[in-house]
Amino acid sequence: MKVANIPVDLVDEDPNQPRKHFDEEAIEQLGQSQIDDGEQQPIIVFRRESRFRLIDGCRRLRARRLKKQETVLAIVHDEEPDSETLAVTQLVVNSLRKDLTPMEKAVAYKNLKDQYGWSNTEIAKRLHVSKGSVTQALSYLELPEEAQTRLNAGELAESTAYAISRVEDADKRSELLKQAAAGRLKRDDANAVAQAARPKGKSHHRAVLRLKSADVAVTSDEPIDQESLVRIGRELAQAGQRASRDGIDVKTLKRVLRDKHRNVAAAS
Image (cartoon, rainbow, N blue to C red; front, side):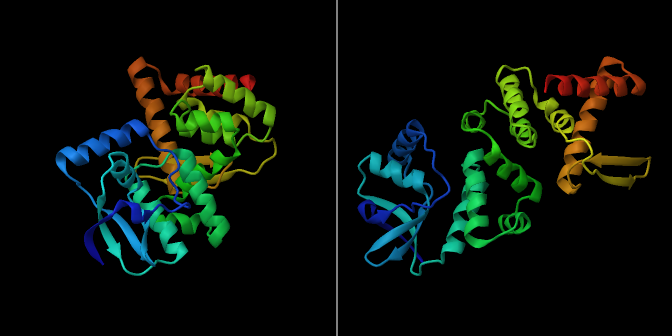
C-alpha cells in the first residue's frame, strides 16, 4: 500500500458501490475546494492490471474530473480485495460519513443478504450498527416508489416509514402514506400506526423489567430487543415530559394516549 498521485483517467468506479445519488452542485463545490485548498483526503483504490478500481472516494474523483484535473491523490492497494470485503468496506465508510440515503442503505443491506446469505444479525455485527436499524432499513423496500422517493428527500420520517411498512393491508398503507404527505400523520404517531394496524389475534411479545424504582411491563407485536427498548423508553419519556409541561396527571395522560391510538386506528 502506498499514497500516490495517479492519473484520473486510469481510475474506474465500482458499478456495485452502494451510493447511487450524487449532488452535482456539491461536487462542483468540492472540486473548487480541492483547487483552492488542496486535496484534504485521498481516494482509496486497488490495482487491476494496468488500471485502478475505486474502493472509496467517488465524489472526490468526480470532482477532479469535473474540474479537468489530470491526477488525484490516492491510497493504492496492490492486491484486489474479495467481493465480500469490498462490499462491506464501501458500505461502512459511506455509513460512517452518513453519505447514503435511506434507500441506498436498504438496497445495500438487501444485496448483502442476497449475495452472501447474511442474516440481519450478521449485517449488524459486521457493519457495527444495531440489528433494529437493519430491520428498519430493509422495511423501506416494502414501500411504494413514491414513498421511497419522499423518504430519500427527507419528506417522510424514517420512523413513520418503518411503521407504515409494517401495515399488511395495502389500502390502509396507501391511506397512511397520504396522511403523512399531507402532514396529518406526525413522527410521534408512528408507533401508534403500527399498533393500530396489527392483525387481531397476533401474538404479543412481553418483557417485564425490574428497575430500581418500579417494575415496567412492555408489550409489543415485534420481538423486544435493546433497540426497541431504547425507542419505547424515549417515546415514554417524551410523553411524560409533555404531560409535566401541560400539567396533566398520569390518569389523564393514559386516556390521552389511548384516545390518540384510537384516532389513528379509525383513520387507518
